[in-house]
Length: 98
Ligand SMILES: [Zn+2]
Image (cartoon, rainbow, N blue to C red; front, side):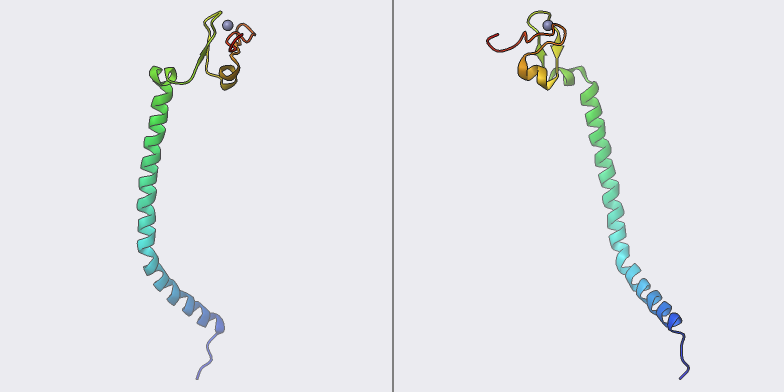
């Protein structure tokens, strides 16, 4: 029996395994690509919806806002909302009970 080069033997085994592995993997790869296509489509739709919400005037109007009773300035800053602080007046003009 002719001795085979261990490296050749290993290479043959790897090629044989890779062939079977590749066949088993193909449906997974195709499913992955389909999922990626769907995900990128959903991501694009989400980005579009966010963009529309940010640019539409009604989108901004629906954000919580604090309007200063003294100068009428409107702020969407969460801290201004929480404390009734007006950056234009530099005062807590909207403070409850204040
Ligand atoms: Zn003000």
